[in-house]
Amino acid sequence: MKITVIGNGVSRAPIPLDKITGITIGCNAIYRDYSPTYLTVIDYDMMKEIYDSGYEGTVYYRYRTLKRLELSEKDNWFTAHFVNGENAGNAGILMAKDLEATSIDLIGFDGISQKLYSDTSQANDKFDFWNERMKYLCSDIPTRRIIDDTCPIIDGFNHISVEDYIKELDK
Image 1 (cartoon, rainbow, N blue to C red):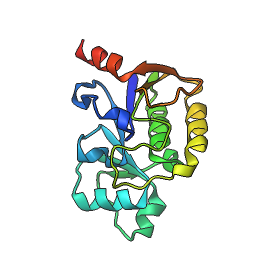
Image 2 (image 1 turned 90 degrees about the vertical axis):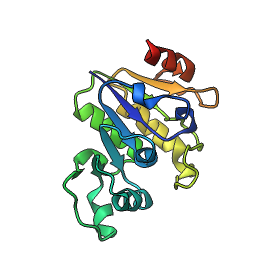
Image 3 (image 1 turned 180 degrees about the vertical axis):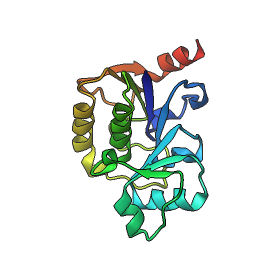
């Protein structure tokens, strides 16, 4: 089964997420606009925001972050091996693999320091590292990056334009 992992790069903005069928895994602040099947959260500030928001969807988080924030566990919040040492996007890829995806679409994985939510933190100095890690994680499964003209081409991925992806969704 194909699983769609949705990041927060600006290329995601024009995509009608409600038209995506199947399992979706969203990252961090996406919960503000869309409720994916699963949400991965790693960042301290985002975890606190999501926790305080009363978000009722299923959340996968890093246990030590929750404890450092001195928050208690919630019934719909889970920790798993794939969140440790990862950013939310790569944790989403690992979750898709854990769910036995046969292919993965990556939306909003722009590979550079542009972000849809300007009020969220981001480690701009780690993009080369995270892009290499993303390539490694996807090396054994067919993966497409949905990109716009601002996104760099990253070797090892099939790429499809946002416009062509939207046409696929409209079929």
